[in-house]
Image 1 (tube, rainbow, N blue to C red):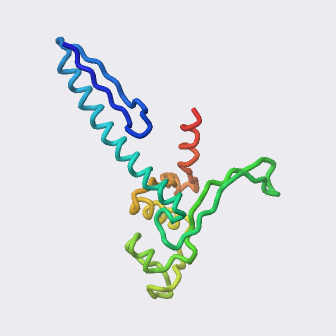
Image 2 (image 1 turned 180 degrees about the horizontal axis):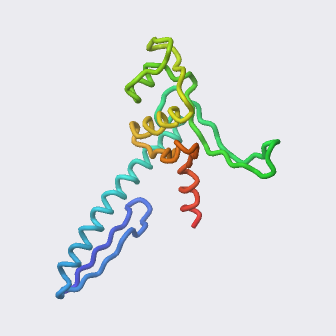
Length: 169
């Protein structure tokens, strides 16, 4: 007896997976493979769903996660102090300064000297600001962008470079 499993995306008609199994002594191993692919399929479906939500928001002109943010398109430029072109990624920034209340909701502490929920945050380092960005991304179900594992050495890794390189391969 042969068992065929074919998974096709309904909208794009893209074949995501096709497995053909024969009943033999390896049937248990084949069942394990099907289970693993089922788990991967569910994860893929969830990612596709999230991606579709993001695309709909972009097409509608809405911010991905903040009502009061501005989308800034990236591109290539050559700074006057550099010999080579630099690439700047697309970014979404808040129209307004980060308030102490916003910071407190994410970071659970307020380092500001002049306290007040509606006052702008002050006295934070660049590294703390990047940590805030990562935690904000997590809160809204987005991937974190900054790898801060080497921040004590003053080294920042931007994951978007890795993502871009993996897509071009």
